[in-house]
Length: 361
Image (cartoon, rainbow, N blue to C red; front, side):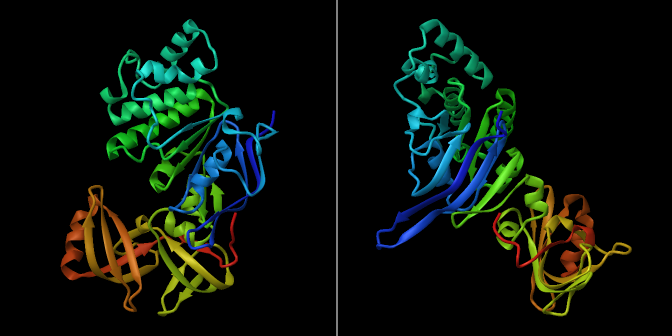
């Protein structure tokens, strides 16, 4: 059995603009999606993630390249002949049909018998937590329940591949977080490959086995959520995924010397040349810690976000710095709020170096 269920080879797509120019949506992308994995396509608006999803589903025709699903070339096949189902952002439920009828629609089109349809509808709705709601109309459901109906309708046909195009974006924060966990659990139980599109970094990190970060129609990095966050390959990934402090400078052994004379210590091995040091805000510690290097900043603003305080400031040379301090250190935060001076410590082991030659994945 093949390891990859989806393979893209040199996938390219360009769209014309009203001004007579063109936009490259997919720039010769190569991608292997593993069987039974939860892969998220993450990136800002216009990066190519939705175009890539629509190319896999068959709703966008490639200018060049191939798409293989389960080893078969699907490049020229229409959407209805691909072993793929899609869950859209707006759910796309039929308002005149009941929950049961919406869920059973694909089975009815396929000619599945009435009794088998009834059993499979009941099983699908039970799986998404909507057992007993077969007779309701979409307008009688909450947004989260409508989302579950869309999922039930997508999984009832037992596709090899489920594509999800920002299906949670219309939900409120609490429901969205709950649905993230439910989706991941459902994917694990079904053993179906999920390809999920989002621009929400936290959503991607929470749900995915792997994340593909896109920009400019190219995959910038494809890796596990932890490696994407801790070891970004370039400055775009470092700044797009999570908050970041980036210090550009020249390497001098175990130090990165930045323009204002400050040295950022690291433990990635002696080296030379240009590099950027990444320190995440939560990796800073407040006040001195024995043996750890420090960074002095002048405080500009403190923002309380519940579980932590976000400190915004700058070095003596004006370099912006952000630190995230746990709410349990509120006493120390109160002291620096008065003095407007902050000394931050950091562990050199936590410093990640990005080299200029680090390219696109």
